[in-house]
Length: 196
Image (cartoon, helix red, strand yellow):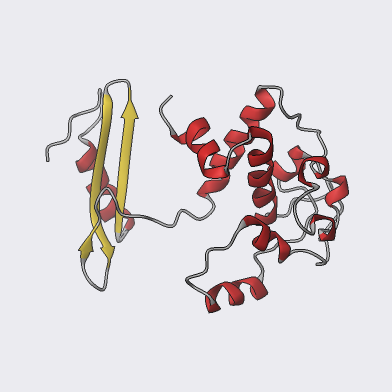
């Protein structure tokens, strides 16, 4: 399929082909969306073993890219006046099963979660990675993941030190659900991923 040109840019397919080759990527999907329309380009392989090509429907593991989406949706709540950056998070999260087992949670605010300065324990440690690998078909709920951090040593006091931490963003996802009043996927689809 011939893809249209974007104003002042090379064709999207050529751009993606060049990027995949230069970076030695197995495959990629590129979506460009704007007032003039939407263009999707694909390149490479979705599965190196079976040589299955990437399609627009290919699913990719996006890892920590989801943190950006969660942060944007959280900051929208702040902009709307539904949350403040210095709001303590425990009052919102008090009904999360076992939450008080998360050391430091009573002193953590929204900004500290966003900036990785919460001082909370990391749930995604070596023990959890082994557990996760032993149950590859299991879909972990946010509450099940959070429970892995309960009772673990806190690396610092809230606000004191930067410590990259997945627990922070699981909590922000739960906070988003509670403040927005919708499941996480629905909230981020409406707020961030859907049409502007």
